[in-house]
Image (tube, rainbow, N blue to C red; front, side, top):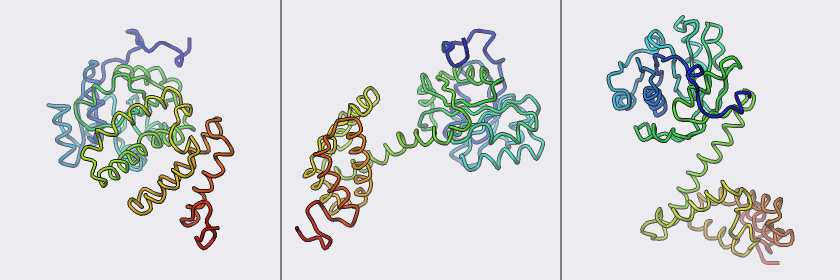
Length: 319
């Protein structure tokens, strides 16, 4: 049985030794993961953080753990969590390697979704052991997040000889390791951003439009609908598509476009882009009949060319 197909449990001989854990970057993620590792028996020993918010977060999640410089974190820890923004990670790793802060045999794990272990190459040259452990979760930076790690997937990338150690650490935090090849990390991260980050934008736009209409509790109105839609999509994929685009209701879509252009123009571009994508997927999966799709796509294409709907000429006049 290989590591990918092994059951998600750890025998005593598979579990990493109890480690001294350090955190470089006390944002919303690092202290949460360190707190989860503490519950598994590891010992957080040091945290670095600059802002007042990061210091408060570290105090709340890791009480009694000293706040020190990044170099001091590495001097004290066996496992270092590098939880800084994606764009800051390469320079941080290079700087730590140049100053000699990385010790041979020291585990260095970053939590970036975009990067694999290649970004840790300077640490590898210094004798460090590189791991990429990306939790597929949105974080608030509070103790609630520790509980949310239960069953949370982690995108794991590591040298093959460290794979079992990386997966064991994830399991100890309550997570489920999913192996991601180094070359696939950017595409993997793009998929997550489409699903999570863009979902927030879509929901926020819907809330804004409903609030503008005078709906007193738009969140309460949307919650059952969005919850059911998300559940159906996760269970059935494109088969869960409903609504006017999937039905080919070109007149309804044209009315949507006209109202959004007048009352919520900031939301129009997103509506058009997603409606076209939805139509394409509905066609590919046989949910939308080609004869219905033609009029619908005319509406969407016409508006994209400057606000003309189906049945209008180049000057906007009826024809």
